[in-house]
Image 1 (tube, rainbow, N blue to C red):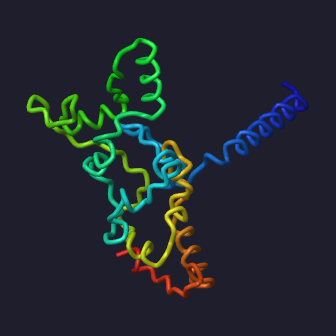
Image 2: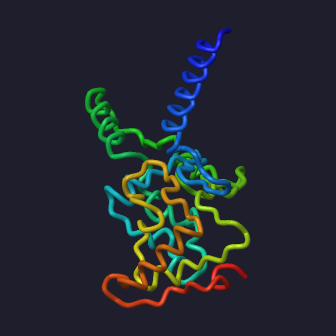
Length: 217
């Protein structure tokens, strides 16, 4: 290969590399940055439907966020407050009602496959009563927002001062499957503390710590 051909090949290679870097920049993360992490959960719980369309407050399910370091994952019993009665989507129920009218019969009970997973986890029978032949098992939800072990974060300190959930978690009410929206890096947290000290939170002055030992102990 002569010098001209070699130079041309090198330039083409550099150009392709640059294009690949540019196109992949959004997916490039530093170590321990899990931004955009979006695991498939054991039950396809739609935050868009619950927090968005039904406008269920975050604290109804994640009630510990106001009183504990961890927001917590709701117990299956919290789900059953609604889903002991609501066993499928309204659309599926209406469709079964229409079929029953056409076939001149009573509508059959409808249970969605995802809610059946909830009932199975609670060892319930078809009437949603405890089934002695089944064994209850916890739902193994996958944690999405993870911080390194050497970082201390307290939900109540942030929630009770007026920080909205979406500041850290994004617009969860628009998500079918929740993902990590922010980087949750130290720089991101420190910038938020500095900005909060400068302008306050919802018009109220705050004193967000910039001391290393507050989050690293």
